[in-house]
Image (cartoon, rainbow, N blue to C red):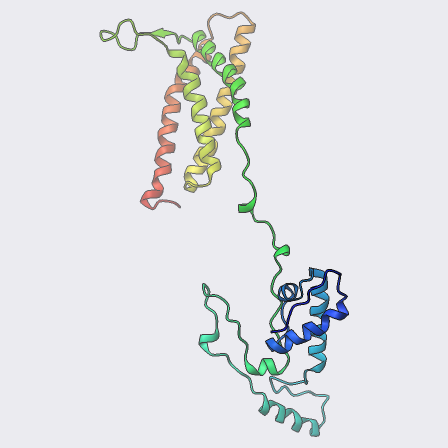
Length: 283
């Protein structure tokens, strides 16, 4: 093998071409730009210039050959004999099956002998600096700012739903009579827990993209409906509170009373649609 150039000063391209010619004679073909960069210890620009010069020299020195016998209408009868002779000398070569790389196998570093005789060389290897950064290499986005957004929203939504629940008949109840008479709970907390939790869960299912299409559609519209009901509930509470109303109208009471049942039904339906993929119903 030829010895790479070693110098502490920049070497002109003209001085690098002879070393490139020696490497061509050793390899039997024009090396790639990456090979020239490593062998000559130069940068990408000089390696590219040397590679172009070697390709040009190889093209000028190589004899003109024909791999296929194609009649030319401009040629004379005498030239047709030469074309036939060239076709016999260089017949069409079909590479063996063992030289054809498989889909998952590494590419075979070999070309037919007829192609080498015609001065055909391998394409330059792709340089590493031209690769495009993929999404897997990009740093993931942080989701901790959502906690800062959720804290004030939680306080406002919780107080709004609890206040609206008290205006519509929700209040302190004894859930375990005869078992724990002293245990009480304010049933108004069922509104923020049920409605807002389902809205967040359905929104996550919709945007995840890992559920069947039918489940995604249901999650999309039910999440938007739950968020809309939550917004209307907050508006209704603040309007009633600003007007000094101590008891909500029966229309608002009816809608609010049905929310826990509606949330339970939507949650059960969404869970069923998510698990239908296990039964092969992802259509």
